[in-house]
Amino acid sequence: MNAPTDVSMKTDEVLRVELEVFRRQHRDLDEAISALEERGTADQLTVRRLKKQKLILKDKIALIEDRLTPDIIA
Image (cartoon, rainbow, N blue to C red; front, side, top):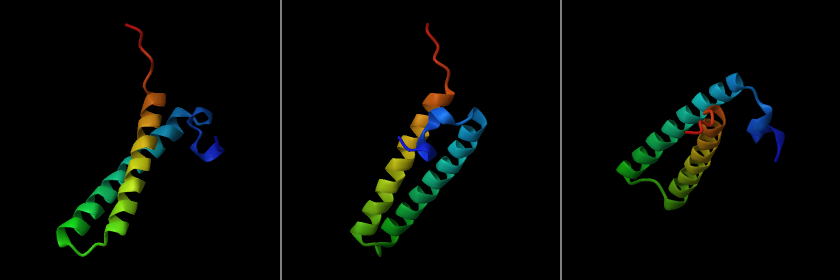
């Protein structure tokens, strides 16, 4: 795994900052996709690319959230 995306090598504080950045980017992509679909002016390739970026961000968010959430054995 390459260093920039390896969450095991980052501090919790860095991960929290990245988490907020990724969440904001995810929301921005969601708004952009909605706006393009509402106007009906977007080509499908652009929409698919934006949706793919959104899914990548979702995966990164989930990975960081898992790292920050402590394992609790009940």
